[in-house]
Length: 145
Image 1 (cartoon, rainbow, N blue to C red):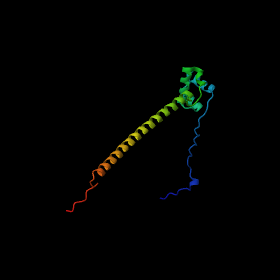
Image 2: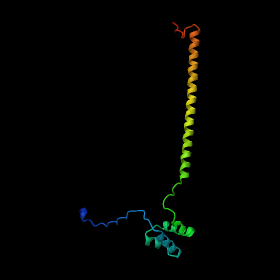
Image 3: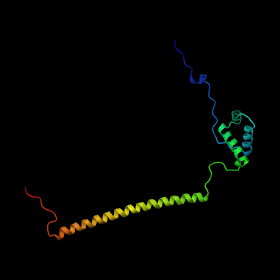
C-alpha cells in the first residue's frame, strides 16, 4: 500500500497566525490611571489584561504605584533615571583616582627594577675592577690533563 504525497502547494496545513511584533507601547497618564482605577474597583486583572493586551505584571505595577503615590507617579520620566552632574563628576573623580593609583604602582615597580639593575651593574663593575687590579688572569686556562 503506497501513499502518494501531494505536492507542497496542494497540502492542507493549518497556518499558524503570525505574531504581532513586540514593540514598546507608550501609554498616556489618563490610560494608566483608568486601568489602575478599574483594578481597584474590582475588575479581574486577567480580564483587564486580555482586554487591553497588556501584561498583568505591568497592570499590577501601575496599580501599586497609583495606590502608593497617587497621580504624582505619572510625573516621573520613563526609563532609567538620569545621573545628576554631581553623580557624573563623582564617577569621573573616582575613575581618575583609580587611574592615578595604578600609575603610581607602576612607577614604584619601575623604580624598584631600576634600583635593582643599578646595583647589579655596580657589582658587576666592581668585580671587573677587582679582577683587573689583582694582576692575575681574569680567567684560568683549562688544565691539560
